[in-house]
Amino acid sequence: MSKAQRVVVGLSGGVDSAVSAWLLKQQGYEVIGIFMKNWEDDDDSEYCSSRQDWIDAASVADVIGIDIEHVNFAAEYKDRVFAEFLREYQAGRTPNPDILCNAEIKFKAFLDHAMRLGAEKIATGHYARVRLNESTGKHELLKGLDPLKDQSYFLHRLNQAQLSKTLFPVGELPKTEVRRIASEIGLPNAKKKDSTGICFIGERPFRDFLNRYISKEPGPIKDETGRVIGKHVGLSFYTLGQRQGLGIGGVKAKGAQKGGNEHAPWFVARKDIDENTLRVVQGHDHPWLLSPSLKAIDTSWCAGEPPANAGIAAKTRYRQADAPCSLEVQGGGEGFVLRFEEAQWAVTPGQSAVLYDGDVCLGGGVIDSDAFHLPD
Image 1 (cartoon, rainbow, N blue to C red):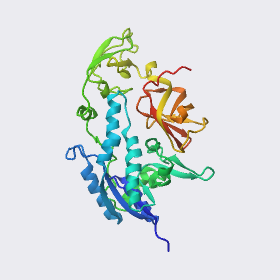
Image 2: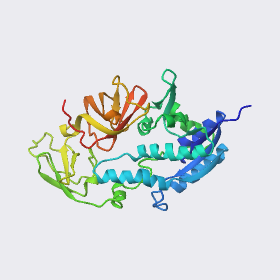
Image 3: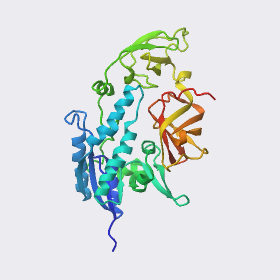
Image 4: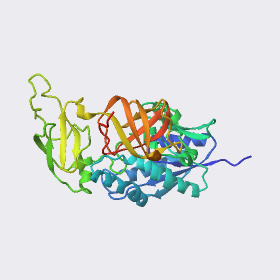
């Protein structure tokens, strides 16, 4: 009788990873759980749930009947993810730390640790799938089957070596089925609320968190005509497309006609770093909020090389519909330009543009700060 393959599962304390571990054990794998501790700065804070998450993960392991280990990756997280997160915010961009966390911690530091434990594979509770393409010999990253939960956007930086070692057991299931399984087998976290927000911030107000690490440099808020209509607390604390928290409610656009656009909400449209000025416009569909094209840098391709420019679509933010576009690869594959069939709303420097061919995630890059209104 052949020895069962060893799979190390990242148990977060949530229901998705818990059901992933149970499914793998049902499939005959030797399953070991790992709880990753990635943040230590305010462990006793009301917003930090890591202690409860560890209790939940350990309880799940007990019910399923697997061993679990508590591993501290906080130093790696601070060096590889949080430092970059702060650099990007201080430069006026809006980074996505969950993408970097997946690339640097969950599928690098965690993967390396699992291999040292003699694992053949690792598994997480992400809603995505991996498929070996027989004709190319390459592993493909696919969207999760539940379109409302698909997390391939956050995983687009995974390479062939990482994909070949990874299992996503719940990627084939809708979330409702995952909840049903958890209840049926009596998992203690079956009804636990899904975590929201950035992993190390938890449910705390985001601006309060950034205040601790980034100095405030207040400056003017100007409309498209250059009129000063308010004061911002620091460009790092705003993102393009932001509507709430601007402090300019009731201000009307210059020349607004009664009964026209005078009550339309204001949105952040641009950040002028050199002049420390926040530019805002009135109305969701203002031209300043629409980008027909973008430029991306720091690219990652799942296949190890850029895709052919055919049947390409892209997301410029999570939960956005795939937008058909053309791809122009630059710098030997280290950058690219996308031109969209329809202009995209609030394309944000620091966020990721992720490319798809149907259900196949091809990779992507970080939207560059000078990415707007490229010439046709």
